[in-house]
Length: 560
Image (cartoon, rainbow, N blue to C red; front, side, top):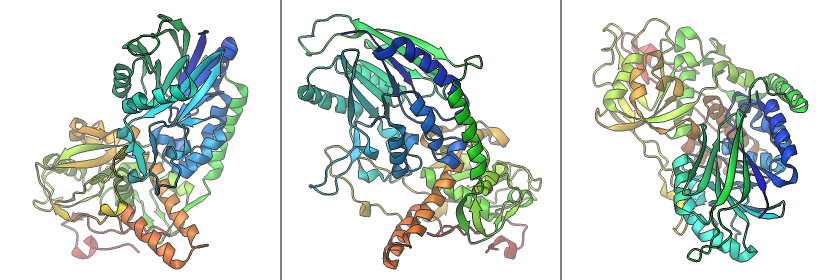
């Protein structure tokens, strides 16, 4: 076995440091020459403010400049759907790997394919060494993909896959000098891989967690190289602890490695070509602001005087998008997140309108909340009325009435709170089991039932509010069940919905009316709101937040 250097990075979203990062990686690649390989462990195309308008295209020139040998699929690489990822993958110029998830075959004659058309594994030859590279992912993010139907995927636990497939691949191709697991999993899953698959895996190049970690566990080095072009790692492999094969396992001894962390600072020189490209990308975003992303059949009322004191149609729409994108029972958005302060007239919605509505790079998370805590959340939301405070709530999945004549903290009308409770239908098909049929899932919306103080509900809200901001102290105490890594950015979730509507609209150009109606019916079941049809949005005020001092006419008014 000859000396070899592995260059590793993961989870890159924003391009501000990209030119400096490329310069430094090139410097290490030139020093190591033909004895180095470069690996990426997933999440490049989303989420970021740039990706909302450019949908991942902004990363292609940067990734191509880094001379990547192969990459592991990340969950956010699928934020815009499989077809768009496939187009980006083909432009990237290097193989993407997803070893332990594949599409369920619809019939026996159909050839099985890895998720998103990725490779199952890659074999590299470098400096006289043969490398087997796997790409391993975990079930916890597979079950949260908003753009992939879970019943269409067959998933195998990473450790089970390695124990089953590595011997088969070795049997087919002969022994390898190094077996590398690139992964997009939480660190505990990487630890488990090292604990259970020593002798079959030599090194784990991880992603998904954003901190920097370099550790050795069970004689296997595990890396997580930070995020956002701020860090990367070079691992020099210069042999094995022993050249003897373990008679009991038939495997080689562990690798001898030395790792070096490289941090990118403002003093790091820039790659001039990438610096120019990044500047052009940022200019392209400004040009894209005039692109029509969707249509509305109604005026959208985003005036501060309205959204910060009462329920409005645009607030209802955004909250519904949040619940739908994360499959949460309830969604809560602070009205201060909506920045347009104007009425957007019915008709075309442009990217500039979307940027006006939700201009911030707002990340979302899902938490568990009981009924008593939800009541505190709602009390805080209406506590400052009639002041136009940004804490005033935009909600989906919950309905309530409040009495502003009562003191803050006691304004929610007793017995008025009802909640939509809905089970999550995201269920992966595990390898070896019969795949579920989509018909077995009941997509009809659940009825609204009286709030139960001890019952646990799932709530989607902004990461900002989970820090206790805007007086939502109770949210900081809650258990997170899906953090921001498992949820799209709010602007991305809205843009994705308009993309789906656009696809259905284009179908009318070449399909029969019956086909469109069938597709539209399924679409509406998934959207779970009457505010969207296959051709436009038409949000209304439907009485989910009722001020009992308003007249009944105003409470039930709808904006058309």
